[in-house]
Image (cartoon, rainbow, N blue to C red; front, side):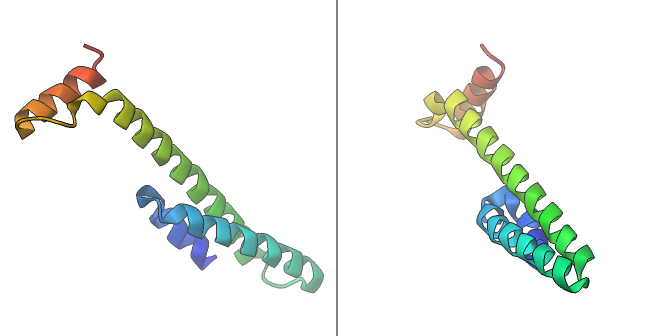
Length: 95
């Protein structure tokens, strides 16, 4: 459960993805154990849900970052910060 929560909190900076995968594996193992013993099912479900959400958020952040980098790749050699921001605005707005 802890790895799922930490993975969800850090999924925006790509650290959460690998932590969430580990959390998902351990959450599924905990669900199987809870099925046998009858204890800890709530924490296991929480681990699976938070880890799954963290994986989805990490994936969406990665897709957004790739889209942004592709859209603004011509702007990476500016002479000034003002030129960079103007170039990014022009490319993102489709000009």
